[in-house]
Length: 93
Image (cartoon, rainbow, N blue to C red; front, top):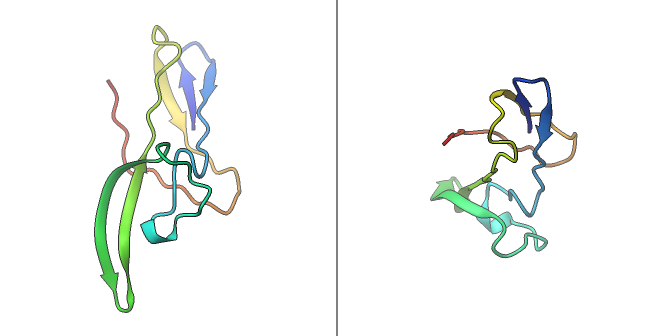
């Protein structure tokens, strides 16, 4: 993610596999996921034919280091790696 401010500046927010996100299928999480870093926002048992397991969505929390600057928009860009994150929702306080 890149947050863009009204003054033209921006703030990158990295999404790191194994720290900020994990595989959608819980049973398929790699060993490198660090305990306590990946936060589960939603999970549901799932079965499709012979495939069964638990699906999970992770959440990432970001605190604006420039709270006095107005955010105008954000970019959600791929780093071109194997992981394919997707954005479900954003909330703002």
